[in-house]
Length: 364
Image (cartoon, rainbow, N blue to C red; front, side, top):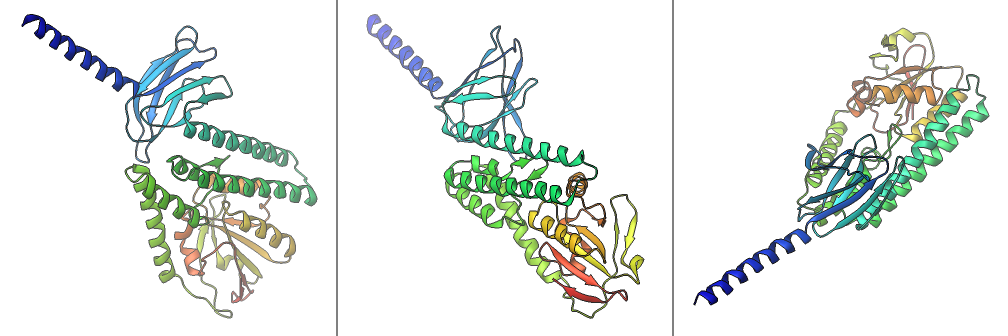
């Protein structure tokens, strides 16, 4: 009887060990090594639109190696935060065993298709950022840059932007079932976000539909749905609020700060033929069209009213695109700008030509 009881207890212990062994093998496992990084701190952080949670920590050994484990049955977005190195974005779920080797400027990763794809995305955006920064540096160092050189620089910048946009669109379609498409929507090259909801509503809606189908339980899905819905409601409200102006009517007065913090009013330019150019640094088409208008209309006073929301990005764009000769204004309210509503601006670029008597001559 005692022998049978002992056998029964041993069997229970074996089953328990087998259960926990199976449980461990189903965890997320990250094994890595960092060059020249003895005793460095590593954090595995779970990302969400609301907050970032640290869920596991480790320190590298004498040879720079480290190991992290985590349990999550839902595929989510993570970030490996490294000491004195750029963070590495990951997309993980139970059962994946990640191998990662990190040096000062790059890393190699295996064990997850999503993680490999995120590296491909990161490599592309890093490369593009370097090219744009080199181009900006080259332009800023040439104080008397000629028109042909400036046009060539703008052509290269536009080409890079379009190429990156096509890359991200293809990336999203190739990985449409994975949460990594949410990160793809929010990629920057230098200070410019490639995909912008006002300009790229269709791709945002596509990502939202795919996330709702394939990743309905993620906070990212709910956040994106809220963003898209808010934008749709704003568009509906905007269409109701906008004033419709006609040629020959009196141009509405406005008061906006310029890049130096001085208040500029329409009435300041009475007696001059002026053009209000509504544009945005994040809209490459409007940038190019405004540049062409400035070149072709040297006899008019040009007032550039930006729908930017970020002051630093706006100032950088003015300098990079050589728009200093115009009057530059912005209230940083984007599409909620009162002036944009006063002039019925629904797209950028929009040009409003105004006579010396401050009557509207043409809207296009």
